Length: 202
Image (cartoon, rainbow, N blue to C red):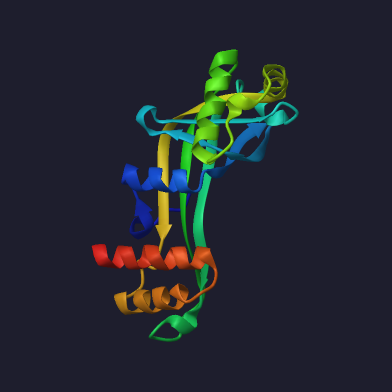
């Protein structure tokens, strides 16, 4: 992606944090010669630089992953419209602030039944607070598993872009963060918090 130096984030801990917080991401691959995208929950195994997920067997995207294993997973975090009225100096134009991580890698299907169950357990443990997958009748669980295709992605490259008005003067950045902090929109409040934290670090 287009990545000016002042928006680039390379610290693995920051990228991994966003990937976990916004784990419902977009898988992009080439299917029958064209881009194909599916929105899926992912589990990050940072220790082994790996992502895990599954999709419906009826989804044709998985059938081309072996032939075209190079994939992109887009993790989209908080984002917000930025009004030029919040800047100190004029004329100015609107923009959009956002945080995102692009994970590039190679996909591999996971087909061994116990490995698939273990992958599903990790997914449930990440997102579930009450329900236990092991409470399902074994025959029902096996039927559900037959209806999905599990896969893992070996991460080969991470790109982080945290566009937080770093190209503007500090006074403008504080004015923008202050305006966003009063918004009822949680995503805009998230951008405000990130902007203020970034200002404190500089």
